[in-house]
Structures are given as C-alpha cells and as structure tokens.
Length: 333
Image (cartoon, rainbow, N blue to C red):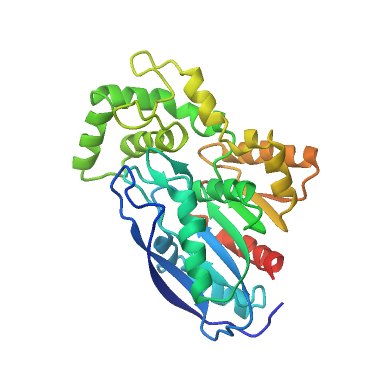
C-alpha cells in the first residue's frame, strides 16, 4: 500500500458516443466524463481504474460536490491517500442521466444503450489517454445496482465491485410503490399527462412526483415495449392497479437476486477479486433486506464477498466510501 500522499487532479473528457447517438429520448449523445487522476502520473505504469456510478437522478459530476459538512470525492480520495489507505488510481464519473432521471446503466430500446456507452465509448476513451490497469465498478442506490449488474455481465472487463444500498430484491424495493404510482398517473390522466405535469412543476423532487417518475424510469429500463406509446410497458394495469404478471416477470428477471439463477452470472461474481455489498439498517426502500437476501445467496453459492450493515438510512451516506474505496484499491492493484 502506498504511503506517499497523492494529489488528485480533475480532468474532463468530452466523449461523443456512438452508443447514445439517436437515442429514443433525444438525450445528449456527447457528454462530459469527469475523471480524477493523480497529479503525478507515470504513463508507463498501469493504474487501477474505478467507474463510480451515481444514483437515480444523479450524474458523475455531482459526486465531486462538497459543502461545509460533507467533503467531495476529490477531498475524500486525497484524505484516504494521505492516511495510506489508497494509492494512485483513476476514478471515472460517468453521466448516464436520461429524460426520466436515470438509465440503470442498462441498454434499453426505450432509453438508449447506456451499458454500451460505459464499455464501448468511455473505457476505450480512457485507455487512449491514461495507463489503465484493472477496472473496478462501484456505486450507490441505482449506481450500486448498475455496479453489480455490470460485474455480472462483464467479468472480462471488471475485476472488483462494490454496491452501496443497491437496488436488490425488487419485491420490496419497487413493488410497494406501485399503488401510489397508479393513483398519481390516474390523477394526471396517464403517463403523458403526468410527464407534462412533471415538466411544468417548479419542485420536481417533491415526493409524489419523484416516486412516480422513478417507476416510469424503471419501466423504461426494465420493460421496454416498442408497441407502447411511450416505448415501455407499465408493470400494472392503470385502470385497476393490478400487477401485470408478464411485465413484472420481466422486471424480476433483471433483479440481481434472480440473476444469480444464471450460472454465467454466478461464475462472473466468483471471478471478482472483490464483491462488497452493504446497506443501512434503516433504508427507506428495505434494501438492507435485499442485501441480506442477495448475500445469503452468495454464501450458498460459495462466492467470496464482504457484507456490511450500518445504522443509517438511504440518504447522505457518501461517508461509506471510506469503507469501499480502500477495499477496491487493494483488490485492483
């Protein structure tokens, strides 16, 4: 482990994306990629690279923000390096925001090819400019979900993964929102009416708005449907509120808990140098239970992993990167 303090500089790459070109929502195809890079860089020595994925409604750049009470990512990395807990590494902060607030870092006919954006656009752009060694992926909430899914799908690229309060066990994380979302959509006359109301609303993060938009975003990611007016199928009947079993089954197939039913996903996680899963015991979406269910499956399958719980909720838990960043660095060097 390096003991010499490392200073990190912010680089920003403007990456024109082939994967996002012509995406169905008309979202930008050329996006900035903020990257934290050691100020002193030996271009002959490959460095660990971490893709850090933001949560729903977030972008990579938001992880850099700091205030009087909470340090930003750059300050956190430098403090951990000064303490000898991490050494030189590259941290990439993708922007995978969509008109609906997020992509879940998946390819979808309703939103665009965000999985391909990560590995066919961003990673090659990094390799052209920096000495890239092993690659890890981590994130919180939707970013934690994306991290696990990408590790399960791309063991040829990814060597370590950390999920903070990731979307696990959809039965609790999403299903409990459906009745409220049915009421909200009906109130505004359906999806089109709700989207128009959302666009005009001065306070878009109001609970009744953001919860409904989040479920629409998940539908766009998990159940795209070209025959639907908005390009995705809802997991419930808008008239009665009854869950649509065929659409809900499509969602469940993309739950990391159920993805463990596929042997290739099991072998992908078995190949990781680190699988770290954690969640607060007061998580509002019961993702702590999802993490318990997921890691219990990992134990049954004999997959080495770290599982931690802590006394907190879903929000304002960036301090937990103090736990995962040293683990990721040690796994990637």
